[in-house]
Amino acid sequence: APTGSIGIIAGCSSGIEPLFSLAFIRRVMDGTEMLEINPVFEAAAKKGGFYSEELMKILAKGEALSHLDNVPEEAKKTFVTAHDITPEEHIKMQAAFQGHTNNAVSKTVNFPETATRDEVAEVFWLAYSMGCKGVTIYRDKSREGQVLNVGEEKKGECSPIAPAGEFRLQKRDRPHVLIGKTYQMRTGCGPLYITINEDTTGLFEVFTTMGKAGGCAASQCEALGRLVSLSWRFGVDVEEVIKNLRGISCHKPAGFGPNRVLSCADALALAVQQHYSPDTEVEKLVAQAGACPECGDAVEHEEGCLLCRSCGYSECG
Image (tube, rainbow, N blue to C red):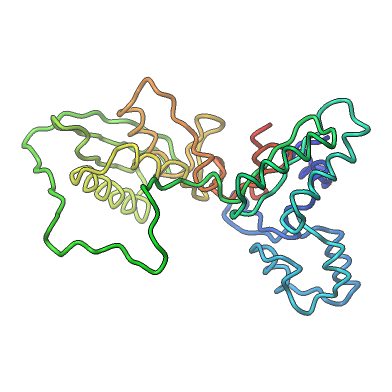
């Protein structure tokens, strides 16, 4: 079966997966947005008299066709997407193909965010009992950052608010002399020089100089440097700064592959990572909120891989 990227290029489906969406927005390199619509659905909508640009934009934002008014019931029953069918129906689709295939069939079972462990276990047992050789499940929003907590707050009760002045972060004073390094980073706006200084406690401040470029690029980099410096002086963890800046994209990236720099913020995160932990390879934060490492848009889980329909990125190549 073709991978997600090849499927997009060839204009065909990527396998036995149901359509993830009937419409979506593709962002191209110059920053413009293009509305992509499934051609079969578009033709049926025009023939059925319920086609409109507004409807397509609503679908592209993630709204289910079955929840919309002024759409014929026949169309709602015909154009069903991955999130409209139950996990059990996903498995039955896979089993129908597995009966005629020697290798394992690649298939992703989509679960809502509210799915429980028992519901996931039932799907695994169903796949086993129906002869499937493998199965991939994905629970919506399961790859977002998870907040650690102890116990559970009771509904309807609010956590007490600490009185003003009871606790306040202390900003570290700046010594007269600091030691640091300057890194030259390549960006779409030109070379970005990033100077990182530290005191006896750790990273303390960062200064940015944007080559020959001026205007908004230089001012935004200066603002970014001031905020990062302030966060460090108040004790914000360096890795948190890297994680929140890494992967931010703009319309003028630079480089290719592992050396690709998506924006000035991304370049700053790379420089800080190199300074903070030079022996550690920078991790691409694909899992962070489902973000595409190339363009920063949302990714889909299809055929057991991460796929971005905005830029064509595929985790499986």
